[in-house]
Image (cartoon, rainbow, N blue to C red; front, side, top):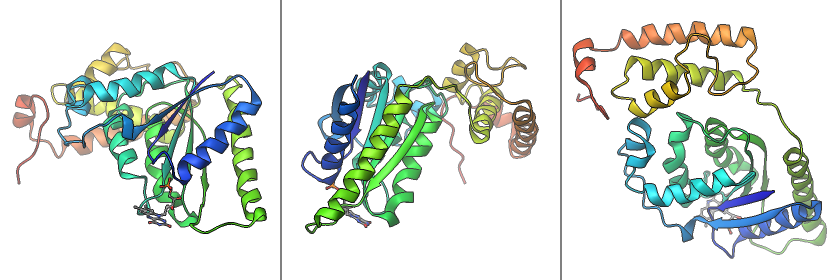
Length: 275
Ligand SMILES: Cc1cc2nc3c(=O)[nH]c(=O)nc-3n(C[C@H](O)[C@H](O)[C@H](O)COP(=O)(O)O)c2cc1C
């Protein structure tokens, strides 16, 4: 199995050390081939906020080729690890820039059937700030999120017992990821994911010339068909689908009440309101 690690950290810091030990444990389980991708070696300029990726298509991003190179690697991998240090109660800047460039996948997920694990070298109080952006992206992009683990690495020498605690935590996480990687899992989206499907499907149907890329995506997937419940075949419980349908209708009427119909008909491509 191919495991791709996308690392938003230096090659000599704590995150790299945690990654080294995590991969060592996975390696012991057998059957893995690893590739490390340091984001610093794949220089993606800052996201310019043009919204082209979301509205027109990812190929319209000014940094498309560099992003595509990384996305192609993720598509070829069986498992992906995202690793970042905790900086200012969030992911590192380089990881955030990467997430901004692949955020469009939350509109048009394509990583179904791929497993992902999230790792951070950070303190307990940074945990939420670090994992919320990565988890949101991973689930939105269609990955099967297998877990997350943070290890705090203070800048002073730990006692052997403290080191052992951290080794044990990494061991447990690696063995749990190994187990999930080797098990065939069924796609069972959570209600929030079902809702997102309904939300973007409706918005793109309402504004096909603005949300052009989403409109193409949902059309290709035949998702505008009344009976379509999800991007791909999956077990969607009747009640969840029913509730999502009700919320979708409410959302649609709420958006309609905000829209200027005449301007809306003329809008073509990325649209920005002027105050
Ligand atoms: C720029 C920067 C910002 C940081 N921000 C925080 C922070 O907000 N809270 C915290 O507890 N630690 C913070 N830290 C400490 C790191 O989370 C910690 O040292 C981490 O293990 C560094 O991993 P690295 O060696 O892979 O960069 C920060 C460190 C750096 C360099």
